[in-house]
Length: 320
Image (cartoon, rainbow, N blue to C red; front, side, top):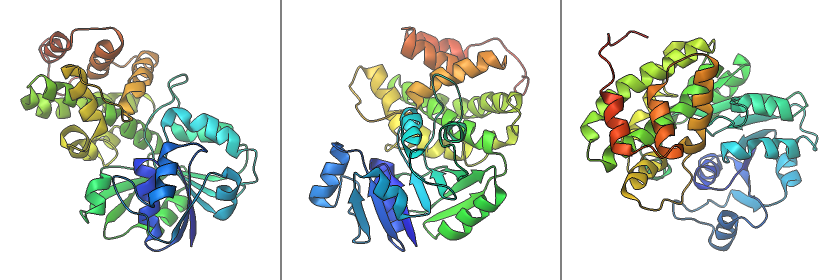
């Protein structure tokens, strides 16, 4: 089988590595991309070495013509512009798998909604999300992830075709909930990193419990299943996001508190803007998201903001 992977950063290069173990892969990166240049020069980056089955290109047309299954792994905020470019090429009938997490800042839309708006051709669209870090997978440490789509047949195909001993794929049945949960866990990860930076890591258990409850309320208000907050897309990804040294979002939150630079992509930073806006739109209280937003964008003192968060008025644990 041939597979195209669009995006050659940490996760995109891993997906090329993963699929390249049993398939022929064409990995695309933007012309001038530092990540692509490094891979072309060394056939490797700081995380992995590409197998011989993976070829590299900066030609988007070539990548789209190469395979019927197209995996996308880029920054969520760049998805619209890429899909608008994709729409200029004949891609009818292809399968697009979004291996990325986030919400569009300007609109609050889910990523599959962005794809459907921009690619004006009949294509299959699915998401593949959940816990796992490149460093663990390439060391042979397995994990479980979830695939979801508005088309159950597509979900079934992806799970049956690409599941392995390294990544066990589960079938999701709630696309909206899966996407919102996957995006929101990065914001909870930033909050966890802030707690680490303040030497308040013992509060992570409470953060996990309240974070899942908070996002479940938003899911329900949006017409999704609140149970998705407790699945692989969200709560199931907490260990990898709130505790792992490999988590970009956790590390960003910790560095922010300590006044240290962090130059890697932390998707939770833009995502929190969209979540706060969705909370207002659907009249759902999102105290953790609002606290992270206040610290990042309103210059709220982090220690006081987090202390206030955990000192909110007494209420029943499972009250709204």
